Image (cartoon, rainbow, N blue to C red; front, side, top):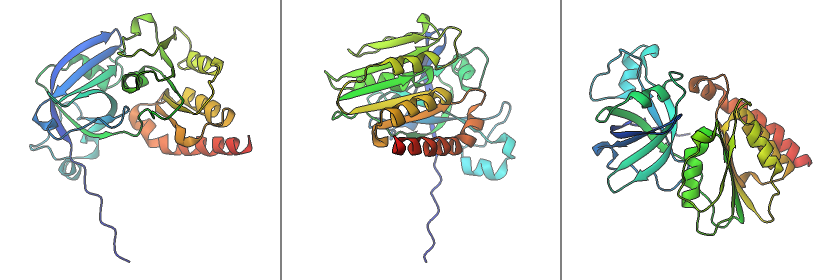
Length: 281
């Protein structure tokens, strides 16, 4: 048997910060540009994402930046780590890539970076990836998520054909976190307050009078409430898997490194449990 060729290493892209903007008290926008985006494209999926590369503080890498070389020559604790962010917008004319970051003070890695980065600074990232776009043949759409899913939900709404029927639920901490979205579809903004993440969202989707016809659903955010909504949609409502885009972007109590390390196993276990339930229903 012939040996399978090794996967070609992915080459990071390089861009520069063009401008930044605070959208709400807890949402920061960073716009990237530059010659490194000359062959970039993010116009087929509304959940396109990129993986930003962050090196440990004080570590400097040789130029040209070579991720494979870094992993060969630097100790593991000095390798760059990745943080995943949805492409909020891609404008191929000026080659501008827009990313929105949820910010909670000094908590985390990417959020604080987004608040202090300045125009002209260099950013390296992998991607884009992506898998979902609204199906114009669906009879209606369900979009539900927390702040982490808001960029993808907003982009999906802006891509929906005129006259599309959609039920949209976005949970945020309070009224000050609502955003203007360029769409005629009404968004139901759910204010979390002191309640656990996802509690209001699950209640709202459960209370929805599901329309007739074939739905397409996009449900993303904290893994705990995503699990509950997946059971509702897949097991109770019997929506086929191919009409669901549903996954945990993050998990309470885990940073991205920890969540990504366990996400595949978590998803496989939940899917097996719920697929069994769907088959028995």
